Length: 174
Image (cartoon, rainbow, N blue to C red; front, side, top):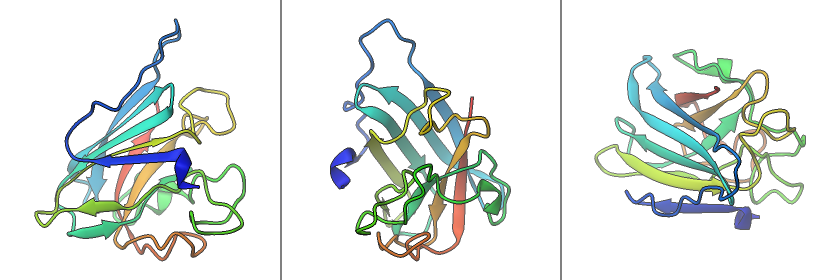
């Protein structure tokens, strides 16, 4: 299941592949907000030949692993970010890569935040797109959001992997 996702930590951005056809590249850049509404980083989303590459750079987070998911609405209202809605799940699956019934398209690998509260991560998923008017598009009529949770995602517990409260959010829309 994780074969559809690639993750690479560190600062490099060398893994991003862009379309070589005449199509325009879809991309979105969004600030990541904390529960006070302060900008703590940025998230970028770029459509490439292998899927959507998500780059996350943030600081001011607690060290350790944090669940991160794509949610169904492009609204990030602090302090709880409930406005982002549920996980992006157009296939109506259950949560978690280890769930035998499948997983949400919004499920992503956990983030590893360093001892200084900083994270730089890159994830590529072939399961979503930035192309409009497609069922699995993050840029549908109401957009989407990227949400970082306070705890590690256990990859199996429905609906959010016991990952705790929503502590940061970035809107995904054009």
